[in-house]
Image 1 (cartoon, rainbow, N blue to C red):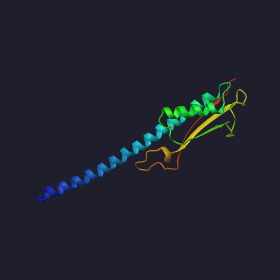
Image 2: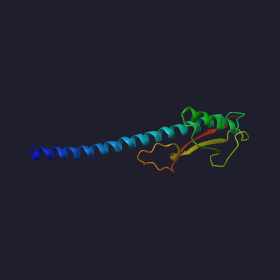
Image 3: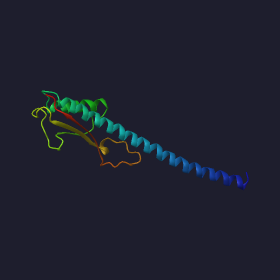
Image 4: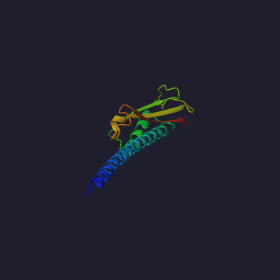
Length: 140
């Protein structure tokens, strides 16, 4: 093999390395972003189900918490710590059992990304919170 062919082969290896690194970074970034969207979607779904459980007549805080837990368990997130808040639209805590019909009930579910996230590249910080929230009117 002559010197010119060896130089070409070396250049091809360097080019392939640069392209492969770029493709791997893109692939792992897509995995991390996709999983973040999966978690975000499930947080939103849990908040929606919690709000639906809290707006019916006779609802209580335990019904909201049970609905949130059931939704997260169905998504495979039952072993992860999360926070559920039941507030009005001014972010003042309320009890769904005592608020009158027509009151806005806001349910917010959040968890820390570092507790649940897949972080192959660490693009999304471990201390970022993933939140989902829903506002519905209490039924009479």
